[in-house]
Amino acid sequence: MAEAVELVLRPPSDHVPPALLWGRDLDAFAAELDDPYLGAARLHDGPDIVWGMRSAREGWIVTRFADQQTVFMDHGRFSAHNNSNVQDVLGFALRNYPLDTDPPDHLHYRRVIQPWFTPAAIDRLEPLLRQVCDTLIARFEDDGGCEFVNEFSRLFPSYVFLTMMGMPLDRSDQFLEWSAGFFRGGDQDRLTALRTIVGYLKDYVAERRTLPEQDDLTGAIIRGQIGGRGINDEEILGTCLNLYLGGLDTVMSSLGWYFRHLACDGALQARLYDTPQDIPAAAEEFLRAFGITATRRQVIADTELNGVLMRRGDNICLPTYMSSRDARRFADPHRIDIDRATPHMTLATGAHNCVGQHLARREIRVVLEAFISRFRNIRIAEGETASWTNRQVWAVTRLPLVWDRR
Ligand code: HEM
Image (cartoon, protein in one colour):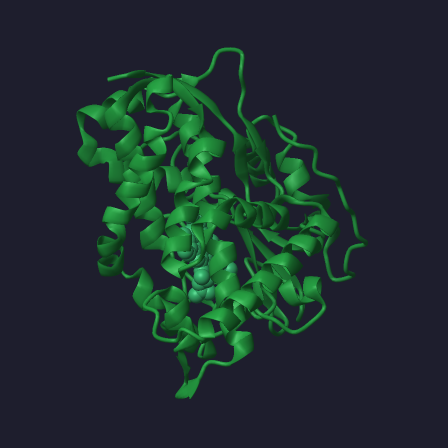
């Protein structure tokens, strides 16, 4: 069952035609059904673009794949500058790099971290992914089940990420608590969590400046060059923050939805065991079907999108969990069909496409292989249900699973 999400309404801007004035909060609307993906998809019954709310910001909600793709690709009209309002929340100047920048500057920031996320770099990481995955599973392998979120999915990607960053693994619980506060807390929790994360990262970066040659992702950021000059303190902090917020929570949130589905789809489990070469296709279909983010852009100058007049400064919300369930793009969009090969935008597209996408895909694949090869008849424990929240990043928060050993 979903946690309650409060509804916040704001007065509409005067340029919004009444027919497009939806005026509701997307997260609260999606949470009205037991399946938030179906809940949100009800918006597809109305206009393609509506004026509504999400996360205390009012603006245009772009519901269709084609329109979202235009916004993602056209950085000349739609800016990411104010994407993750961290400076609004913190009250002092700090941006998420590279997320809160537009091309051409964006490329400088992206280049600092990109080498750590190429397919070849992820190949080198794969033994670590397998080792972390196997170690975690060994803890409950003989118990006939586990609480998937607490015992596995929140730990696995965070151990990998913290190892990449050179951050202390024994603080992972603390880190996860902070990022959960930021992504799923109320306004005050978000503020506290963000201040705490930034405070920690500041101290961590200061400490790491004394070890400039250390060969990890944090070291690479500290040694980064931005257009021929050394990266400055705010940019280092903002890059670490972007990675922290992008890297700690996303795969965890995604895996919960995938295993919630898998636990109800015995035929898919059997197919993946019989033909493990289909696991990458399953990972891709899970990514498509269970988008977790709704990112943002701002209109740079008055413009039009799909017949809708947008004013300079308008916020645009891009819920990827809606574009991935768009029937104009994906036949029978709510069906999980690992044979469909239509590209999706759960990991975005355009300049800001997810820098962690190869890591995310590999993590998902490794986890599916590990569970499917060991366990059969994976299911939700009798009398139990999954819990989820769709505040900010959509996440399954509790998933009690049982299984039989192979
Ligand atoms: C299934 C997991 C993931 C999903 C669904 C996801 C989703 C996304 C999306 C939609 C964007 C684009 C945001 C925008 O254009 O406004 C993005 C960007 C980004 N993601 Fe991911 N992400 C995932 C995993 C990761 C991981 C594992 C990392 C790092 C360890 C990461 C780091 C980033 C960063 C740094 C950006 C900003 C890229 C840029 O601005 O150039 N993400 N992600």
